[in-house]
Image: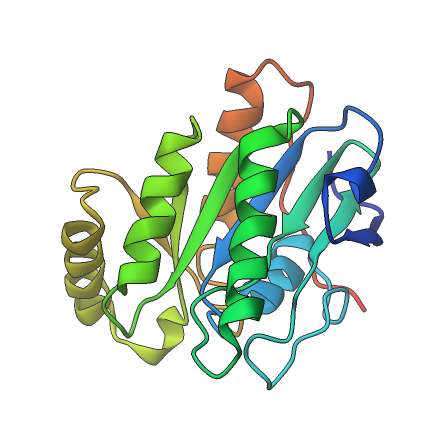
Length: 208
């Protein structure tokens, strides 16, 4: 199946506002300014479906995007941005925790890290949170175009060590060069197959 229609379907500030159906969901989570919006646009072959912002920490809701009416990609609030109030940071944590802990539609969580930087304590807490919620976690390193291939490998090893996930694959991605796009879809297709979901995504072309 090639993606024909991907669209924004709504935002939620709590579980009473989640879409009320049983469509499978893949969630994307990461620190503020890690490039979640750009990655989702790249995956779906869209340029402006998810609005990118130059202001880290702007996204304060859970945003749902339908893919051909078969499943959803869910953009969780970015975490770890220091220049917001403690109250706001706590509200993001509550949103993420409630979603991970209660959403029956959720089949897997994709955690993004910036390949140029070592994981922070917030990143370490997030991967622990994902594992504790019963998910394996799919790790993707963004902004791969900023580093050469050898440095990418070194950085991935450092990230794996910091997160305590040695031996787990980290997919290097770049929204600009589209590196890692098909590798991630291969991983998602494997998850769909494992969960016995009749969903398989073929390679996409870029569109407006």
